[in-house]
Amino acid sequence: MKVKSANRNRLTIFILIAMVAGVLLGYVVHKNSTPEFISKFSVNIKLLTTIFLRLVQMIIAPLVFSTLVVGIAKLGDIKTVGRIGGKALLWFVSASLVSLLLGMLLVNFFHPGTAIDLSNADTAGAKDLIGKTQEFSIQKFVEHVFPKSVFDAMANNEILQLVVFSIFFGVAATAIGDYAKPVVKALEGVSHIILKMVGYVMNFAPLGVFGAIAAVIATKGLEVFNFYGLYLFYFIIGIFSLWAILLVVGFLILKNRIPALIKRIAQPLLIAFSTTSSEAVFPKLTEELERFGCRDKIVAFTLPLGYSFNLDGSMMYMTFASLAIAQAYGIHLDLGTQLTMLLVLMLTSKGIAGVPRASLVVVTATCGMFNIPPEGIALILPIDHFCDMFRTATNVLGNALATAAVSKWEGELAD
Image (cartoon, rainbow, N blue to C red; front, side, top):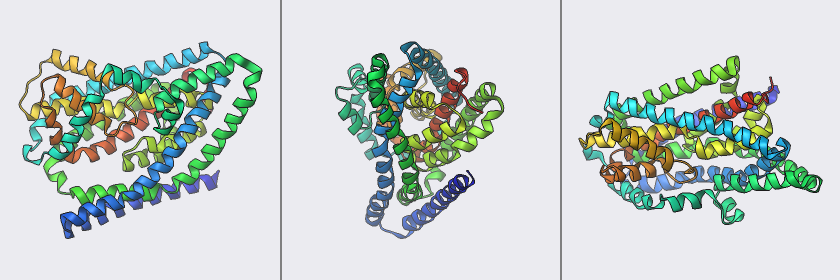
């Protein structure tokens, strides 16, 4: 146990060193290079991040499928699946509403949009995002939830589609009984192998962190904080407020187990923060929650659902960014309109996990619906990477707390 703890601490130290080294290298390149070199450098150094993320992505599909099917088989019947799913969705919906409301309240209190300099808009990036907004319709939402091919879902790491297929497969395996036992046993073996692979893949995390940080600092430079300091500051206040709410609720449910949970998920939080990818820590988070005491069957069922329905940091940012853009353009939205926007965001944001820059795509689509210039997304793009670091870490925290809470409610949380 001491060896595992030492290895975990060593990896955390390496990740922190990689973050500092990435900032320093990126800053040197930004200050002493031509725009052409910076562009090439950013693309090339980010290959380190691409390698790490691809290594993680290659194990997500088999991990979700194997653990979820085994978890459902261990749950025993459809009634138990429905009960646990109901408790999980109760947390997800409540947390989403709180996150959206918090973002709305903070924007109306701080007015961050008035601090945005219209001359710093990233119009090129905005065009790309505006082009993606057509993807969000009822038809596309349904297609995103229900798979036409499990192999296609696995190839594209569509977590929600994998969850749907795995639930059907797991329930069918449970209904068949003894005939399915060899299959369930084999999948349990697969899940253990995949979790062993997690340890190997995590050794590449410092390189992924280094590449991500160096690329963004080389491109944006530290000067971006001069222009967007207030906007980022107000958003961080919002994130810390959301963390406080989540941890207080977590404490009411888990009592004195909260410090132990935070200690367990500290490394996944750090990796999510530095790579801006909650997907990157899904396998590691699964492992750490089980070590914390959550039963594998609860983790296997709740965590994949949370990755699609419980994105607390992203939810808060959606109302925060949408209303900030309206403020930047001097557009006044009354309370009724803001609440309507909140409900629209609540619906359109579900099932967007895995869509690149999903929060911004939803914000862009929502702005268009409420007569806010969609191109206004260009105003917040320069600082978005740094906001994404905080909202991604918050997503991971929210899902860890949700899984632990459901485990506690089910009486399946070991000491």
